[in-house]
Each structure stands twice: as C-alpha cells, then as structure tokens.
Length: 362
Image 1 (tube, rainbow, N blue to C red):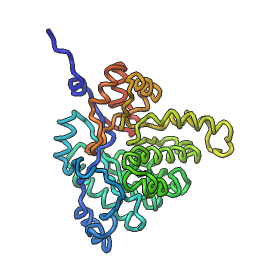
Image 2 (cartoon, rainbow, N blue to C red):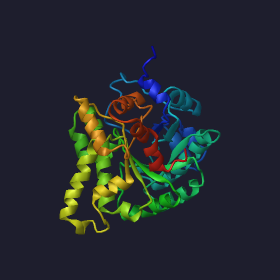
Image 3 (cartoon, rainbow, N blue to C red):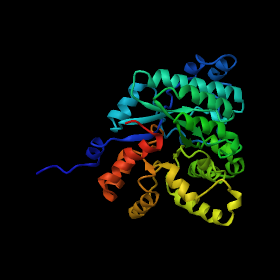
C-alpha cells in the first residue's frame, strides 16, 4: 500500500518563497560600526546610546518564559530555513530601526551600513535574496541609496518600516523614495513593530493598556491600516503604477474591511482623493499583496477558507516571520492550502504571488 503524502512531503516537493525572514542578531553593532564614521560608530556600539538602548514598557518574553531565537549567519539560514522548512527562497530583511531614529544623520548612516553588511555577509557567495533598509526621514538620501544598491541583483525590494512615520507613508514627501524604487525595480514591503513602535505611534493607547497581549494584537494592524489608507487616499499607486506594495506581519483578516470601507468612503468623497482613477479595491487587487503571517486561528476552520478566498491566492503569499517567537511554520498555511485549494492555487501562494510582487527571477 502506498503511503499517503503528508503536509511535509507536499512542502518539500513545492517551490516556496518565504517573504519575511528576519536576521535577528545577524548584523551586530560591531559590524555596523565598521561601515560608520564617528560619532555614529561609537554610538551604535555603546550600551547607553541610541539605538542600542531602545527602551520598552513591555515584557514580550513573559519574564523569560519565551526564549529568543536568532538567525545570525548564512549557514544558519540554510540549516533552519532551506533544509529545516524546505524554504527554497528565504527573503531576508533586518529590522534596522532606521525609521524610528530621531537623529536623521544617524538613520542615514545606519541605512547604508545595514545594506553593506547584508550584502557582504549574507548575499555575497550565496543565492539568497534580500530587502534593502531605508531611512524614510530623508527620502532624498533614501532614493540615492536605492540607486546605489539597485545595481545588486539580490536586492529585490525595500523594507520600509511602517511605524514612527510622520507624516504617514502616502504623503508626497516620500515620492522621491518611491520614484527611485520604481526606477530600480525594487518593490516595497511595509513592516510594523510592536514593543517600541506602538509606543511611538500610539503613546496614549500605549499608556492605557495593561498587557502586551493587547499591544501585540493592535500594533501591526493599526500601523499597516494607517499606511494602507494613506497610500490610497494620497494616490501613491496611481502615481507609481509599476510599483507593488506588500504588507508583512499583519495577517489578512483586516484586508477586506479596509478595501470595502475605503470603497464606501471614496464613493462619497472622491474630491478628497483626486489622483485615484478607479476604486480603492481595484488598486489593491492590482498592486497590493499580503503576507500570511500571523495567519490567525478561527474556531471554525471553514471561516479561514472564506478569508483566504476573499483575499485571493493572487494577492496572498507565505511568510514565516522566522525566527520570532510567534513565527508561522510553513505547514500551518500548507494545511489550509492543501485542504481548501487546488495544486495550482497552492503554487500561486507559495511561489507565483511573491514572484509577481517582487519581480523575482526564480
């Protein structure tokens, strides 16, 4: 009797792109300092100076009950992701913290140093792909950086931290950044942050909540919803029709509400979004993409099928968020896809959607 294929077998036989792999601990302050001039080289290695001492009111590790994972070397990426989870193409990023730095000169230096270390340590002599860090405080210098690293084929997109941005990321002040990304074929990926990002973006709510459970539930959702709204109302996808926008680490359940709510508002107040030539949902369907993690856990699995169907395989891609403590194993999404969708639809989510979203040559 032949053995029935397991979810692990299916994943092993399928090409998989992981859209959100964090190099936690992979780029050290000392490595960054080698690419920085003073006084910033000393600042990043000092335990008393920003950004080393980030400061948070919360206890994400539950008093030590949650052990932090790291992903520090190319060899570990290969062992943990490629061999361990059968991820063929991990898309590497690093939460540099550039976006939240009050000193824009330091942010620009960190942006360049982070990209240099990423290239030298993780991309040279490997086939890995990565997202470039940017400092949105200086869109003009971020554009220069994208022109610089756009020559490197293994950089396929821009890791744009969606927290701590004033004005929000749809504002025309960021147009030079988006223009450079579009010109260099670098697609945009937005990513929020909870422990420190929520404090910066929503200080009043941060002070009013009692547990990190509340913060971790709301932070990415609120940050990404704000970015989503700002992009559409300010007409960013209309101005940059060849640019794609991917939202990481907010799941997908919020997407239908935002599409349909903006459709409704736009039908009443079109004069307030004058650059749009079609409904917000049409732009979302054409240029916006969404990573699966955190997938969510409805009591009724059938409701997850309905949600996946609404967002659509052509807009959905797999992301693990590895090695963060709440990462999604590929088998979690694989179980849903295997039970609810055809082989062609599974392939769409696991490889075709990220291929389209980031213009991957794989």
